[in-house]
Image 1 (cartoon, rainbow, N blue to C red):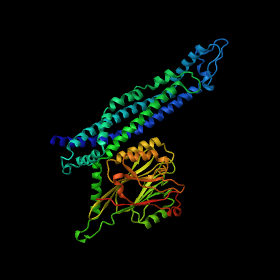
Image 2: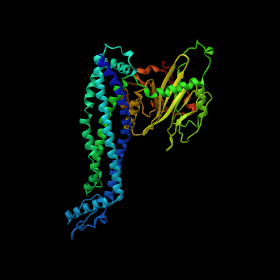
Image 3: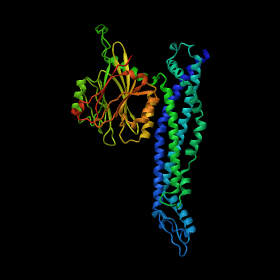
Image 4: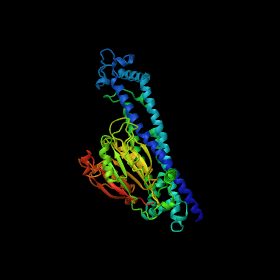
Length: 518
């Protein structure tokens, strides 16, 4: 049993390390794969444009490309027609040869192919790294599950290091629901990712030679679409299929990790520094403290608001916040492109926001009472804007911590990419406790538009709390999401339909209270 215990400690530490490396590789892969697909589509468009734009003048330099006496060479590249009349075979061969030569000699064509090849090569390396991490994660999960099963009921985990207690906290759930068997089966499959996935990678990515495909298949075919373009479209389809397959593996890895008690080593130093700063700024004699102070006021009142230009409505919004005695105002659609711009309210820290600098609209921000310690940072995603905050409420009896993500997803952002990036955010949050994800998702929770998101949240053990329409035209677009196991954090959630017209909003603010336990 002692040897088993050592292995549990070892495997627990290894799994946390592997999962963090998996997150890094997942983020890199999610950035590269959409770029690779788009890069290939751009190249296909260029090739087909080159193909369509070619004409007789491009190819008559070849003697074989000139129709014999009495023969007529039509222009297949401009009109989508085929060769006809005498000299058809010789003309076809000559035209193909000349077009290939013309393409090879075109510096822009070569540059475009080289760019696509660079994307393909980077994609192959990122995919290999990701699948390797996934295999390692599920292999170590299998080993840990086997040890936990052997030690179940025989070891007092409370006296062991936190990382082991984290594993044991999950093992009760795993053993009780049969997820160990599921994880075991999945672990065995995923640990063979190198055997199952990497051949696909080598065929779809590593073995692709863009220049070879393009220059050996540029020919005269019916219509304006080149054979090279068609061949590359097959590659794009394979990349998309592989993306869907890998997504299933990623979601399963997140699900397994989410069942563990969070490991928050990375944020311990940040939180310790914030507490030390608070103690330094609030030194008082212990005799002057009120020993009867109650923790009844340690709840945090939130308001989630789509402002549709917070700066033009700053006076009305802040009056509402002060009237409601709101502790944290989470804002979407700040419509701010200017930086920096200091905006303050008495009793609150300066308004923190992540501006959208390249185009109009969007933007997220937060206005937080000054008695709440805050660590805040913006997160970069392609399909939604996001800020992350650690909120610390310090009283004489306890330190309470809440972590929040505030996000805004534009209505027309690519859903497939958003789905992947949101999975990445959940994967990151799986390492933390007391997490609330809130924002304007621009996906209606009240109808079939949200079916895929509902399946995802349910599968990962997450709960969406808003159940009333949040937009004046209907639809539950503003969401508040927590772990199912932490759903108790959200109290008294209310959709305020009264204030919307006074501030000229098209969304109804969502208010709720959180009372985190120490």
